[in-house]
Amino acid sequence: MSDPDETRERLPLLDVLRIVASVAVVHHHMRTGFLLGIGFGLPLFLLILFGLTSSGSPREPLAGFARRKAHFLLVPWLRWSFIYLAFLILANLARGHAAFARLELDMLVSGGHLSLWFLPFATLALIAAKWLQRCAARIPIHAAMLSAALLAALSTEAVAYVTSFDIPRLPTRMWLRSSPAILWGVALGQSLRMDTQRSRRAWLAAVALVSLLAFALSPSADDVDSIPRRYAAAVPLVALGFAWTPRIPAFVPALSSLCFGVYLVHSLVGKALWHAFDVAHWPAALHTSAAWVLSALLVAALRRAGVPWHELASRARPTRDAEVVRPHLVHESSPARREAA
Image 1 (cartoon, rainbow, N blue to C red):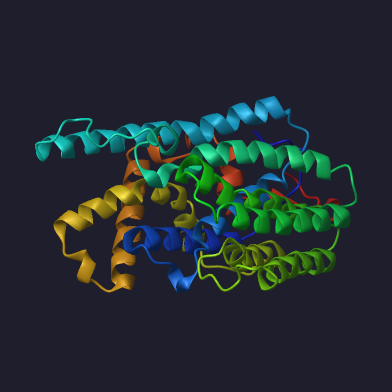
Image 2 (cartoon, rainbow, N blue to C red; image 1 turned 30 degrees about the vertical axis):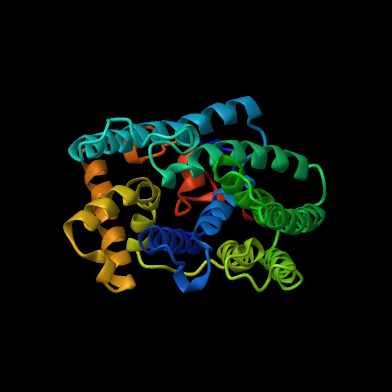
């Protein structure tokens, strides 16, 4: 439930960015390559998630926040893990293999499909972002943004160095590669504490500049899949989403609200496309578009049927959790922009 003392602000461009992130992730999973040659899809999604979390109310007890996040993120993870495992077992039996032949220990972290690995990570990372927000609230906004951005740049380079070694993919490598998003998100989210749009935009530009400099100065800058390159693409985009509030078509928020469900179901839809059609010879844009649109339609159908397996929470009991992961809803604003919640 909303606190009547809280103030909110719409950030409509984040809707567009969530759709872009979703399409980029689907493209990567369908074609293994990266949209526009940069793996910015998941960092973009996580930066929005952590940025909005670190701009929310700091008054909620951390234990209560952790319980809610575990419910909103891990319940869909468990549900869809069982669905993917059921299809995997059926596929094994259909091919004459043992039912559990392709089950691996990594699935204890990734769930029933590799594409679901980020949900357990996001649960813990959101708790870390909320704790960092409470620390940042004790210091001036400019210092909080700058220190978080500098720490994020250092952690990005440190993670790039560590993951250059041969380390296990799950959870170590995948979790490490995404961990700098926590600090980048905090740096971006703190901008909503500022009293004026001019100050907010100036300091968001500074955070974006730090990410670009971190990439330019990185020894791994020439690597097309380097971690600094990913954040150099994602951080300025999310900074723009926090700084600019343009008018967007009415259908965009509706599409954006489907994105989390698309993350959950697109791998299943992709498998169906793979078995039904010769998608390997399709143009990449057609393959990606078909997978995304069919996934969105499946999510919309589940929602209309009242089956909330694709949702973070029941639509009948909206809470601030939905606001964190669905940026088309209103968010906290600065004290100078107070209006009724």
